[in-house]
Length: 190
Length: 276
Image 1 (spheres, rainbow over the protein chains, first blue to last red):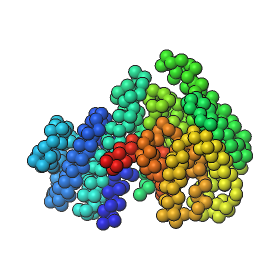
Image 2 (cartoon, rainbow over the protein chains, first blue to last red):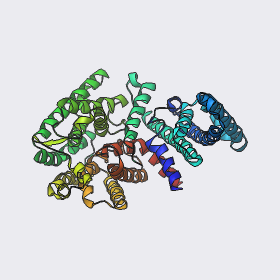
Image 3 (cartoon, each protein chain N blue to C red):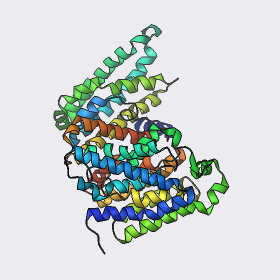
Image 4 (cartoon, chains in turn green, red):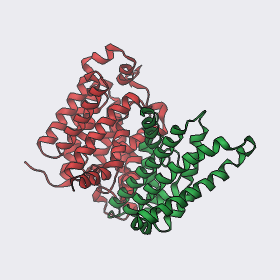
């Protein structure tokens, strides 16, 4: 259990997928204008990622050697299935959040952070099932932490009199850079 | 006595860093004064250029915030780094961390720590050698990490901490800084060092006391609610000790503060939700 938690914490903080590996920046920048949307996307991404990593591990064992170059393609299909399943589940159980997320939910399928984490977690030698799932869960939680913190900071600076040159996307990118600098201090710390 | 005006507050904070600067000059020589001159000039020049470019009145540069950032930066930087590195850190601090966000009061990241961290990442070769007047020796922190008892026991190590506490104590007495922030920071640091079974002397090394009084107390970048402030400062204190022991950088207070700045609004929100 402690090994599971260690992998989750490392994947979420020290190897943060957005702030450490610079993947998944499109939703990070474009969906962080509102806190509720950022939180919803974070929760949905975490759910999809955990399921997709579990499925990918199972497929990895079944896949013949000759299919190895096709792995990214196959994984994209797996992610799409996981997204579809999550969407349907959400529609049934949490219709309110489902309606709020709207078009952003299917867009998770094209989030490169998800494919990135799946490929990275399966790259480890003899990765066990729990390790891969922990990596997926931690990566999703890290994504959620980054996007929610970013949304809150954007909320805080939305009242500032930012120079016109930096208003909007430029400041968002500079801000993401400072956040990445901060998180670089966590590298290797856990 | 209560000082309300933000200009007066800033200049008082700058004055309160003087004991710490004097202690650093005593320990490391005149390089500290050179460094102070370079950072203050670069910060003020950058401030003036940014104000001019935004069409704001140049008199706003007299609010003292650039000088405070430069003083904090001087304490943080190793003495005798090339002047370009010190100037770059000051320009990063004022230009990229403060004026991009619209100037004083809007920046989510502490300018001095952001400038220091960016310079640290950009020029790492200058940050690992602390030289005192031509005799080069590794930083006391690096020695303590290697387990050199001599470095850890010399009373000189306590001098910067005492000087910073003297200046910071005055700030707290004048109510220029929220007392919750240093207290929570120290509690977080002490609890973490006890959990890691560290020597108590690590607590007074490497600018931790200075950060407790002058960096964590920055009202702009800290959490805004009372509960959020306890949570924020304790988190930064704990992280500073944890990263110093386990992190990959030689000293990590700047990174702990920046991570705290990232999470400060989250601390506010978490405390608010939990109270509800």
